Length: 325
Image (cartoon, rainbow, N blue to C red; front, side, top):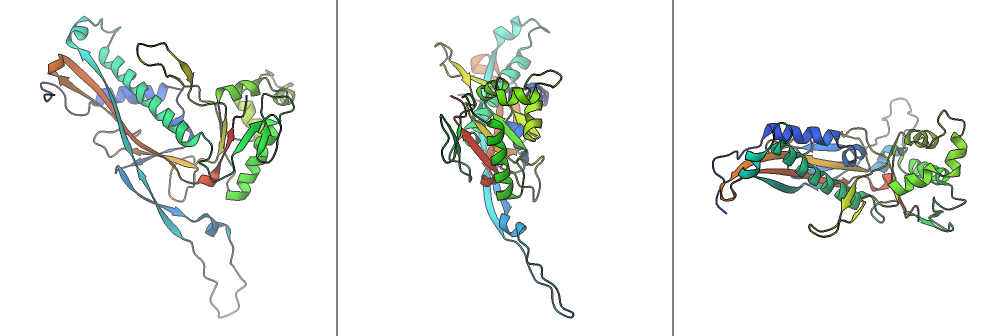
């Protein structure tokens, strides 16, 4: 392929700004609202982890006159992140550009929003595949079943199920294990539907003003500051074939502790490392380029996004598998 000529070959700031604004408005996507993003200058690097046990132990002793105090300290270990770079483009032909009906149709803007949504969906799928599944956390997965045995609970759309008690128990168990009370609960859309019609919730809120089960009411009943229901869907049908739509997040739930913002000595079940050091990248690790594809008689609008979704503290989350039928 010949080299681009006669057009932009640098990061397009106006289009990047459109992309960032679109991300902020795209409420279906939740990857950045659960575990906080960590802006990083390098594509990969090391970071320090404090040993949890050292911070929940006391060795202080009574001190006799003219004697030294008891010494103590903590251990540091290293871990690494490595941001992967994802990209997609949309070409705008000269014919389409000449025929666009400004300001109603703005092909640069539309192409920017289109490819931004593509990468947001990619990141959302990566988030679900990284965090929202069994056998990845350092705690014991809880599995929904028709009857409850060890590490099981009655599925929340069955009679006699007790979602409030199930979540509350694990919340206390995690607090005892880590010293941090879980502060975020992620539930699939089908789980939320079951809860909206569940007698346990309805009975407790029947005297409320609306008598309707909302996320705020669920958060209040469970004493969890943030309850999130990802509603983003994916079309898994190939282009030209029949559409096949489904939720990215399945019929499960994740209870976790997430730092309100990243920082030194701020534990969190997960972090998203976003490579902002990539030339012109925004805080999300994304950037937009526009350049000429003369051999195609087109302008190319291309987005790149670089991130690494990392489990940082595996004992700070518990996964509830197949929570509903």
